[in-house]
Image 1 (tube, rainbow, N blue to C red):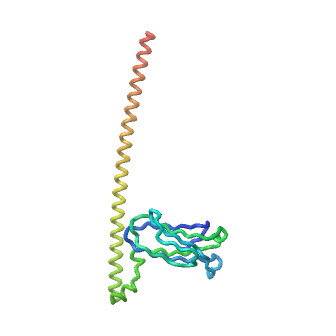
Image 2 (cartoon, one colour):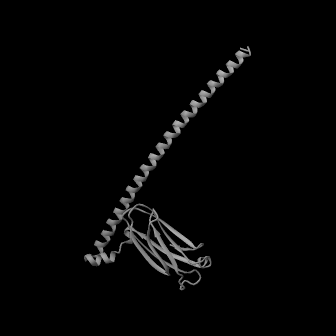
Image 3 (tube, rainbow, N blue to C red):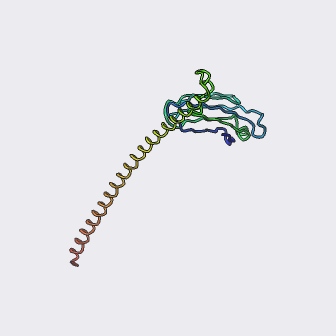
Length: 186
């Protein structure tokens, strides 16, 4: 993805499962002259704010890690001043899972033919889809539990409100009867 920096710091977020290979490449350049590189500082953090990669003063570079936990990972790019930011364009290639795997290196290492490599890619894609499906099922269960808990609270609140209204009406009736009896209107 390619985007212009509009402030000194630009952050990119990615939702990633646990135990997933992540590879990122970046390049910063002048938006009117792409051949002219601009130095940026990069900081990659996990969902709890632990720094996984940090570098400063690079025009381009890459980072790689394996996620330890599921969550929203963040890569922030910063430049020295706001004038530089307005003139900077960033190209970020953030790949995860099967897309981050170097299949050529695997094929050479294990002496695999093209068909076997494609079958391995498909197998890994299926595993990735399956793990994402399991993660979505888990999130759905969590959301269902939260929804049921909220519905229960609302029901009890409604019952309590109704009880308060009935109690208030009973007290008002009692008071009005007493009032009219004292005034001998009833």
